Length: 264
Image 1 (cartoon, rainbow, N blue to C red):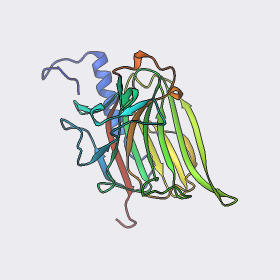
Image 2 (image 1 turned 60 degrees about the horizontal axis):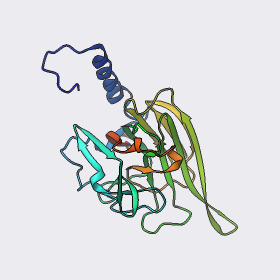
Image 3 (image 1 turned 45 degrees about the vertical axis):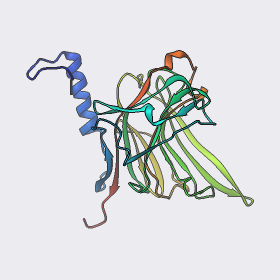
Image 4 (image 1 turned 30 degrees about the horizontal axis):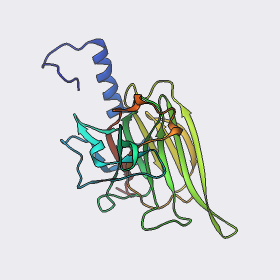
């Protein structure tokens, strides 16, 4: 949709290109890329005036492992987009604030399926633009715990696809990270892109705009989890400067499919 255009108004070439790209990503490139039969199990298109707090939860405090505290007021919905805003402000004992929101467990949890999020990176380095899930709930810190990072994206064009999993070696539970960095051909803050994961008991297959970019074994990632989107100020994301102040990771939608039972 092109805002500010009267009905019947002529689109410029740039506006027409943007509308076409939105259509392609929303209709053509969205959804599971395989021939299996699927059904939509969860979605949020962020069409309301604010984030639906009956569906989502938010971090509400400082973060010891990163450089930003994270708060519900940093997650704003505007014009059909969830904006995870980074601000340079002292709050919660830290010099930056950002956002971290996840779907409530009593609303939706699922193991396996096709997980997808369309979003645009914040246009500055120093930030982790993340779409992910984990199974560390209910004090689960043993060999069944895992984290799937569908994308921990870094400006300008880095996609980090990771599985953190557990192995028991000589009676000791150890965390192992299977990660790959993919470099896109364009700046991922310039426009929205679709980041997807097909998750089966055997494999994790990562997608960018409908094209496979990574594949790895699922290992111990077998428990139901819930969707999570977040931002974090940290040096791994690049140099941290005032340029980051006010920038946002913009989320167009979150969608999760599950395979239909055989015979349906």
